Length: 473
Ligand code: SAH
Ligand code: SF4
Ligand code: F3S
Image (cartoon, rainbow, N blue to C red):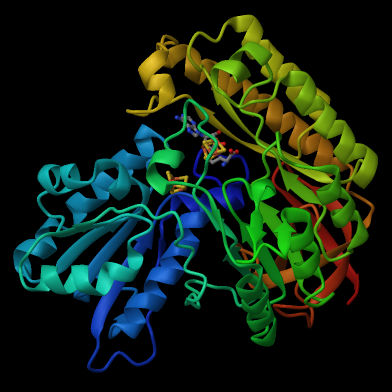
C-alpha cells in the first residue's frame, strides 16, 4: 500500500494527483456523483465499491465537481501531510457550497474513521462522514444530507468484505485491475493508524475473488493485483470448517483462472511471507516475480519499538529465501521510515546497510509522522527533529536511486515479456507496460495495442524506466 514520497516518476504522477471519477455515458435523471481518492490502492479499490453501491442508489459519476450533486473524498490518514492535503482540498469546494448549498460534501475512508464527529465539527463544509465499513449505508447517509441533516456512520465491522459487490472500474486502463482480498489489519505496528481506521482483519470468500477475476478476464482485463494490508495472513474457512484456504492456495487458484491473466499482489509482511508462497510464485509463469516487502528499518532495536515482530536477521533470511527460490531477478521493493522515535545515527546506518544487502529495485520512503492514538504516540517520544528525519530520508532516497539504477541496468540487453497498458505519458508514438518485476517499459508503438503481451529487448534505462524495442508479440 503506498502513498506519495516515492521514487518512480510515473508512480508519483499517478499517485500525487488524486484519482477522480469519470463521466458516465448516460446521466439523465440521475444525481451526479464526483469521487476523489487519496492514499493507497485499497482506497482506490474502495472507491470502485462505493461507486457501485451508489449507482444502484441512482447516482451516475461525473468528472466535473463543479456540476456534481455529491462530492465525495475518500481520504487517507497514514501521515499528517496526507490529512492536510484533504483539508486543503475541502477549502476548494467552499465557493461551490456557497453557490449551491444543496450540494452534499462527504468524506469517506481512513481520515473519516479516525476523526469521526470531529470532522463535522472542524470542517463545516462536510455533511457526511462514512468509515471504510459503512459504505452500504451511503445511500441513506446521502439522502439524510440531501434533507439537510448531517449524517455519520463510522461503525467498524468484523465481517464486512463487500464480497458480493461488483466494483465499477474507475479510471481503468481496461487491462489491469485491483481485487481486494481482505480488509483491516491485526498487526498493531506501533507507528501505524491503519488498525484504528480499518478495523480487524478479515478475509474475503475465495469463490467471490475467483469470480471477480474471471469476470475481469471475460471483460478483456489481463492483470489482477490482489490487495490487502498483509496478504500473507489471508485465511478463510468455510462455515463448517471443512475447507480452508491460505494465501499460497488462493494465489494458486487465481493463477489457474487463466494462464493469460497476470497475477500480482500487495502488500507482503516479512513476518508472514512463507516459502509456500514463494514456491507457488515459482510454479506459475503468470504470477509476477515481484514482491513488495516493507522493512521500515534495518535495525533490530527500532523494529522492536515499531512492533514489527521480526528483526534484521529474520528479514534478511526472508530475502535469502526469495533469492534462493525465485532467483536474483525477482523484483523486490521496500517501504522505510526515517527518524522513528529514538533512532540513532548508527541505527539509520543499519537501514542503509540493509538496503545495500537487499539491492531493492525501488522503494517508498517516509519521514516518521506521529499519529494520534497509536501505540508509538502513547508510549514513545517523537524526539528526532524534522531536519534530521529529512536528512536521513534524503540519504536513503539517494541510496535507493543508485540501487534502482543498478538493478535496472541488469535488464539492459535482455528480452522481457511486457503487458501493454497504453500510450507512454510523453508521446502517442510509444506504448508503455510493465515487465514481470513491475518495471515500466517504454517502446515504439508500431502496430501493438493495449492488452497485448509483447517481447521487448531492453536497450536502455533510467532509475525509473526501461526503454526497448519489440522483438515479437
Ligand atoms: N500494510 C503495509 C503498510 C501500509 S502503510 C505494511 O505493513 O507494510 C504504507 C507505508 O506507510 C508503511 O509501510 C510505512 O512505511 C508508512 N507509514 C505508516 N505509518 C507511518 C507513519 N506514522 N509515519 C511515516 N510513515 C508511515
Ligand atoms: Fe500498519 Fe503494520 Fe498493519 Fe501495515 S501491518 S497496515 S504497517 S499495522
Ligand atoms: Fe490506505 Fe491511507 Fe488508509 S494508506 S489504509 S488510505 S490510512
